[in-house]
Amino acid sequence: MRLVVMLPPTPDRRWELAAQMGISGIIAKLAPELTGALPPWDYASFAAAAARYRAGGFEIVGLEGDQFDMSRIKFGLPGGDEDIARYCDMLTNMGRLGIRLLCYNFMAGLGWYRTATAAPGRGGALVTVFDAAAAAAQGLTEHGPVPAQRIWENYAYFLTRVLPAAEAAGVRMGLHPDDPPVAELRGIGRIFTSAAAVERALALSPSPSHALTFCQATYKVMGEDVAAVARRFAARIAFVHIRDVRGEPGHFTETFPEDGATDMAAMFRTYRDIGFTGPIRPDHAPAMSGDATHDGPVSGTNVGYEATGLVYTVGYMKGLMQATSGLAPA
Image (tube, one colour):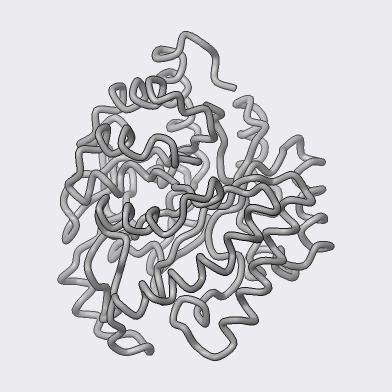
């Protein structure tokens, strides 16, 4: 396994800390709202971002999240085909730059979603919470009710059109499950809310580019046997996210990595036993004393990626990696 972290596109304290922790590989989100530049379907913008990370001592191992507005693709709106063509250009550029991993999702309208982003956790640390009743009280989005079947059809259409470009570029596209894994969120259907649903997606193509991001806490919230699911999907796992939770789909709280419902040591032994050698990163660490805090809706590299929580989780992961493999993390 290779321990990587998600770093923002502009250098800040997290860049310094990552270097001090011995991290050389990073995951990037290069959406215009974060970079002030064109999305990575534009080669010059993409190459400039890669050069900026390289100057800081980091290699982009993968991209994660929506790198530009995917609404027309996910909702099947006019202009979606043009956006799919841009997505294919992005994949081509990834190949040109030697970036072989893309963590993507198909959460339409509302992506990663929480109803509280600064709830008190252990010792006053701040964590995130999802509560389905609180989400429902916020009402429908501007998209109105959207059935899950329509989202599924749009996903299948998207996948068949981008996989050839991913294959040509040598990129593995790691599908992230829906977070939170609920059947609908403020009227919009969600389609990847169980291991069976993810397996349905995998059945669309045996392509080596059609892979998974194994976000173990999302599977835990689903009520799945996380280690069993990891073994079941072993050959298709391209990327692993590490965080922990307590609760169930309709109401859960994120926690410190050793303070939730998952047997983390058992999971790291599972990754060793299935032969997983890809990138693995900390995800959604609590905000600790002195970290930046955020109230209200957030996305991208905000809540869950604060400096001290990141350092804490990296140290925890390094210990587990050494304990389970006998080797220092790459």
